[in-house]
Image (cartoon, rainbow, N blue to C red; front, side, top):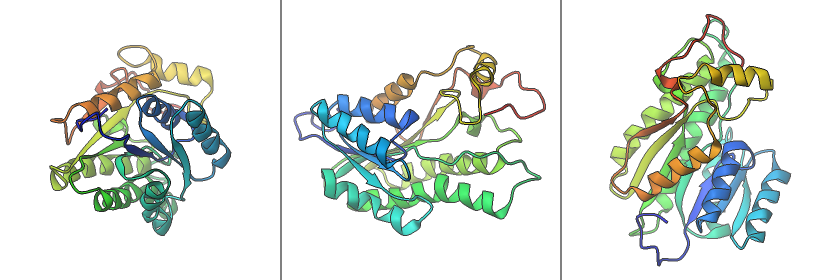
Length: 258
């Protein structure tokens, strides 16, 4: 299931923000591939425990693990909690994120710090702990879920975009710093699922402006994750799964609802 010997015992993945949306899809897909899955959540305990139970009912192994990623101590304890529940973690997927609208003229200290803490600082702290707990001789993988925006900079969602741009930079830095024991890569999704602020019509208007004129299927992101795990020469790179949105789209001057 990775570049490691497939005859080895199952490996454990920790996915942050795994109770819903893309995180949930990745958790189910990895479980189907034989991974043990630590399902991280902050406030979505019921959904996380239900997902872990669903994986277990199918013959897999999963556990729900809680942490507020805005709390550095809680974040630092997340890898040990996953190890205690399921064994050594050899895959970390930094998927959880804060996505709130601000503009260059409306950014506040609070909005800036909140995005940077959850979207950039927490993945760094988790990756530090991940590398520090990686068993001797094991090959580790870190996959950061960024955003196609890091290749298609716009003026809206300022704090969010800068935090994801920083995470993409961190991906490249740590790919070099942690090699050869750990590979670090990124996936940059485009319009995959409606945000809580979008109506179905607004979401459709968004994906129709992409070059391919279609939304992203969460299964595409799962396939990209599997590809990364199965490609031992792949590190420090990003896969944009965005129907071409990173190449530009027919946006008007007002921020599209996202």
